[in-house]
Amino acid sequence: MYAIRSLKRLYLNHTGIGDSGVAHLAGLANLEELTLQHTLVTDEGLLSISGPTSLNRLYLDDTAITDKSIPHLAKLHELRWITLSGTAVTGTGVKTLEHRLPKVRTDRGPPRPERVDSNQWH
Image (cartoon, rainbow, N blue to C red; front, top):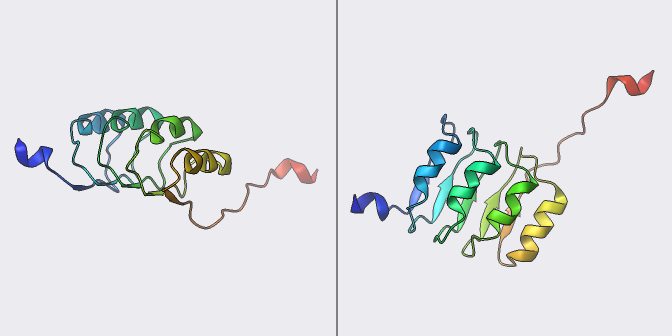
């Protein structure tokens, strides 16, 4: 069990892990890097990892998180790098996070074209 608790990096990208699976990560206080890209994680799942932690790199691209996650992410005081491409986190959410965690750097990826409403041309 000690080996799991001393885990520093965990890559779960492109897996079927969701909120209930992420809840099992809560005791990994030594975890420094967590990759959850292309998973089923939502705002609720991030509650599990917002406690005391050594987490400094978090990859959340293409997950279902929104600005509702920002207060929980802001509790990750060691966080220095986070990726949010393909999420519903807004520019305002990113600015709030960067204000609360001045040492964090965010990557939202390239701008995505806005969805065009087909009814706007009628």
